[in-house]
Amino acid sequence: MTETGVNTSTPEVLRRRMVADLRARGAITSDEVAAAFLAVPRHLFAPEVSPQEVYNAPEGIFTKYNDRGKPVSSVSAPWLQARMLEAAQVARGMTVLEVGSGGANAALLAELVGEQSSVTSVDIDPDITLRARTLLDKAGYGGVRVRQADGAQPLPDVPARGFDRIVVTVGAADVAAAWVDQLAPDGRLLVPLRFRGLSRTFAFAREGRHLRSDTVIRSGFVAMQGFSAHAVRSVRLAGRDVRLIVDEDQEADADALAEAFTGPRHEQWSGVELSGQEGLLPRLEVWLAGVIAPYGRLRATSETVERGLVGWVLGAGMPAVWDDGSLAYLTLRPVPRSASERYELGVIAHGPGCEQLASRLADAVRRFDREKRDAEPVVRAYRPDDPDVPGGVSVDKPSTRLTID
Ligand SMILES: C[S@@+](CC[C@H](N)C(=O)[O-])C[C@H]1O[C@@H](n2cnc3c(N)ncnc32)[C@H](O)[C@@H]1O
Image (cartoon, rainbow, N blue to C red; front, side):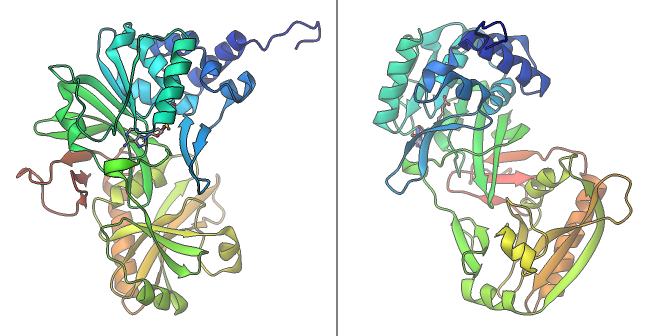
């Protein structure tokens, strides 16, 4: 309300403010995506919360939890939907498959393609498809197709040339073969991938027989269920307080690593500096997964950092490497007397092979600084049997082999 008593917080006003804000933050960059966000009555897709909350949501709004209290469905955050739609480059007349329903994003896609029936949204959970169907009808998007299916499996009614765009809105640990098969020759695939303890959404286009990413978005999504469901492994180094996060397929001797962690600490400083704003660390984290193996993430509570049990580790964790009985992880320290806030990257290592392991990690960081510091990492997704897969380190999943450079 204003001082004059006029209600300025109608959904339309909130929506306009949201779009202005998303534009100012660079999440919306095109008039088409802005127009779609202005058209979709977003509050109708999360009726359990107030319009204010829907239009100002900094992150997703959870709409369903499993019996262990874990969120399994949500309406994704406006900034994330905006960035993904911009990266998807959706245009009028295209056919689009959305994997993971909710309603809001399917409505945005319908606005962008201009023909509701060109959008198919699939969800594995019948509660969610019922919810999406009901909310889409209510919001005037009755033509959007909603199907209950495992979106990582082949679907029955795919357009003859494939979908022009496939937008996966659930955290996957693999690039499902069905997505590559169902994608048009000039199609684009948006997929949030979880690997090596990281969570990034990639926009892929075809490059010969494989896919090549051209956009990387830092993002978190609820985990995929069904055929492509996966569990993250957590190796405890000091109870639950300090853990190494590894993929299911990676070997890590939990007892030997926990034992190493109790031993003396070896430190190496790389000389590579960064500031909090430049986004270097997120790029480095992805790039390292393509040059060093085994590679995962060390997570530690802030209390263990304060106690000095671990070095300075950020809340979401830091890159880590290990071998049979040693481990090393990245850490930061402030650069003294720097004009702006700057930090130096270093390595802390434990175990009999700690010096060698620390040098490998520190050398990789220096190479990144020399060769890739300002570049967005490029991920290529090959079929596992593709003879073109280059040698070297890859991230191997059942349906895909990821290389990163
Ligand atoms: C983040 S929500 C989708 C958000 C939605 N696109 C929106 O408009 O904001 C993720 C959804 O993926 C669904 N899901 C999980 N595994 C799936 C699978 N294998 N196939 C299809 N949907 C799946 C979940 O049931 C959940 O509803």
